[in-house]
Structure formats: structure tokens, C-alpha cells
Figure 1 (cartoon, rainbow, N blue to C red):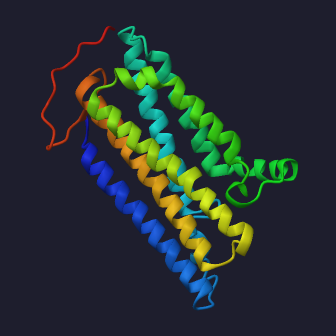
Figure 2: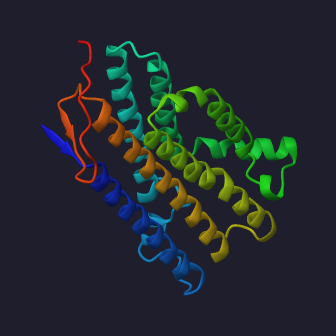
Figure 3: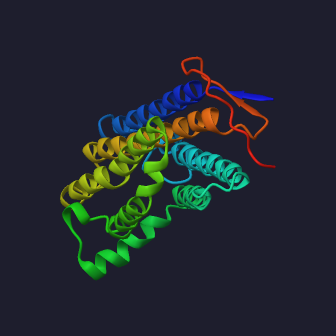
Length: 242
């Protein structure tokens, strides 16, 4: 039997996220202040704004974990004929897509065609935020009833996770776009902005995983996995249909 502590998982993931961002900032300092842009490949390996490196792999795996946990919850909800089973299932698919997007940077492919079509500048320099922002808003509206049915603690964690993740992915990205449109991307200021963006995204994922694990500990008992947290009082076990 596997025993998991939501708090311990969140703590370790937070430490990893902070370490990756600090390593990226150190690489940016080496590049733009010390004049050493490679350092035997370590600068690119930890650059949070680069593809196919440690930060992107970490974020992709973390999003994949979210998808897996959501799928497990959806399976348990299906066994009890819960009316929000489909909502959990759709979220699992969305996070699977986000995991693939994080690894392949699919959203960035939209920037150039949208820039040339809409002539976006300033805060909208990275034009991919337009369709993704619209989809995020529609998803939020569509999930209002789902959020309302959740336990208060879980709802608050999910909302906080969304604020952190979307605030980083879209909000700070807009600030980065404003800076890049005037001063370009190859400077320390832009590197700091992107580091903040990635840190918020990573912390948003951490909060969401913590919320999912805590929810499973209290309300989902159908799996041969014991999820514990010494800081939480045990909740009554809910029987699920087989």
C-alpha cells in the first residue's frame, strides 16, 4: 500500500520549483552580467524560458500528475454515479493537453500568425494569450456549478491554484510581452519576468496537486492508496459502488 502525504508532496514540489527558478536566474546573471552564456550547457539546461530542459520536463510531468489524479477521481465518481463525473473527466483531458503543450510549446506556434494577422503589440505581443485567455474564461464560467459543489477548502485551493497559474501564464506573460516589444528578450530584466511567470505557474500546479490529494484523502477511498496528512483530521470513509 502506497502512503502519500499531501503536505509533504507539496513541500518537495515547492522546493524543486524554487530551486529550478533560482538556477535559471543564476544562469541569466551569468549570461547578461558576467558574460558567460553557456557554462558547459548548464545555462540552457535550467533556463525556464527554454524548451526540452529540466524546468519544462518538470512542469510537464507535474501537469501529467494532475491529469492522472483527476482521472482517478473521475473513475471513483463514476462508481458512485456522481453527476459531476464528466466534469472531472474533462479536467483530466485538459491537463493532459496542458502537459503536452508544456513539453512541445504548442501555444507559441500561434504567436507569429496571430501577430501578423492582428498586429498585436505591447501587452498582447505574445498573441497566443488571446485564444488561451478566452478559453480560460469560458472554462471558468462553465465550471462555476462544479466549483460550488466542492467542499469549501477544496474550492479555495482550486481557485488559488487557478489564480497563480493563469496569473503567471497569462498575466505575467503580458508584462513580459510589453517588455519584449520595446526592449527585446535578450536582457536580464526579461529573464527576471519570465522566471516570475514560471514560478507562479509551478506554484499553481503545486497548490492544485495539494488540493487534489487532500480531496482524495477525505472523500475518495476506493483505491489501494493511503493518503495521509498529520495536520488534517481523518474524515469519515465514503463507500463507493463496485
